[in-house]
Length: 216
Image 1: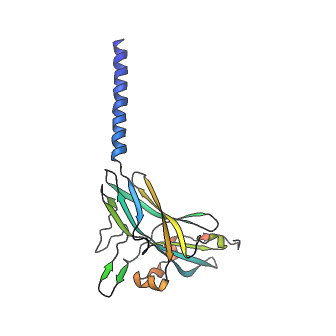
Image 2: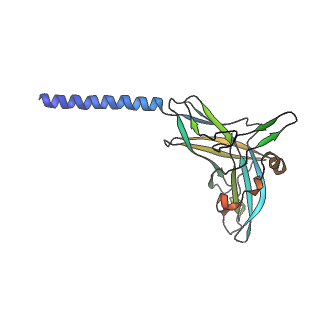
Image 3: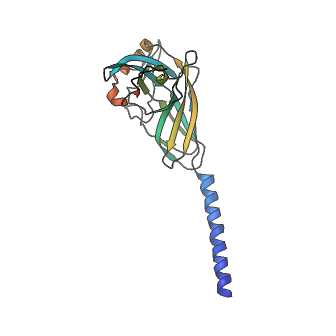
């Protein structure tokens, strides 16, 4: 009888200990928040020069979000990915990976400002994606979407804007997403802002989306 009571007491103690450990884990776990920086000033999409794939002309689009990721949890965490999810006119969901670019440089009349590229090391920025508790990391990211065939593969455009989700995943598997609104920006302007942006070729972005039909 006593052995049975001791066994029950040990089980109960283990359950209580597990509840406390779970409580501390939930309380202390990282909590990421993703936001656009100056959404009325930055967050651009642009029409890139057409490409070619299997004898067909492709349509190419660039996306430049300026992303801020803050950690509201009590445990530091590292980012494992930050991707852009775009919806096409045909309601397909396209997930894009970021691409390396030279640091954006704004040449003003009085000042020159160099922007960090998220996760990319440079002489001015560490490129670290470790987010301490109560702190954040930020930077520009660049994505290219290329398609061919029917217009149903084009991104959904409302007016001159494209709405897409920035999805950030941390090393513990936590996922945070925020809808960004991208305004159309003139390619000539962006080329002055980011050197060589049109020279990023398809072999770095992967095969384009699309099909050989002409359906919309």
